[in-house]
Amino acid sequence: MSEAPDPEVVELATKIFDLARQGQTEALVAYVDAGVPANLTNDRGDSLLMLAAYHGHADAVSALLERGAEADRINDRGQTPLAGAVFKGEDAVIRVLLAAGADPSAGTPSAVDTARMFAKAELLDLFGVH
Image (cartoon, rainbow, N blue to C red; front, side, top):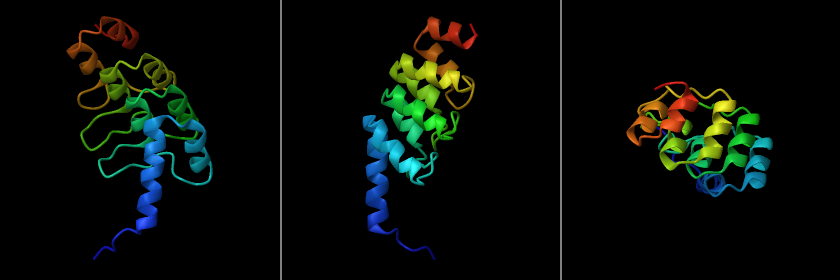
């Protein structure tokens, strides 16, 4: 039998996920530096990195990667931060993730699949596929 989560912990986690969505890098990394896991995920499996990437915050993505966030961490829908950034057209985020070693073929749909779906030839070239 599992205990209900502490409402204060849920409130804090919600705040931290919002910082990632909003790209408030300084506040976000202060929590990570204080002990919040860089790979913290929400109830949908979205990591802090996924939320920052999807919402176009390259600085937050870079800071999280520097603190150990997994570039290819897949959420509950099989998506990676790179595929999310491709979907949203976040070129700066795409470049930060690739520089950190993100795999364009990881996930379903992958970043490659997403680039093909939206006919983004320049990204396919960047990924080294055609």
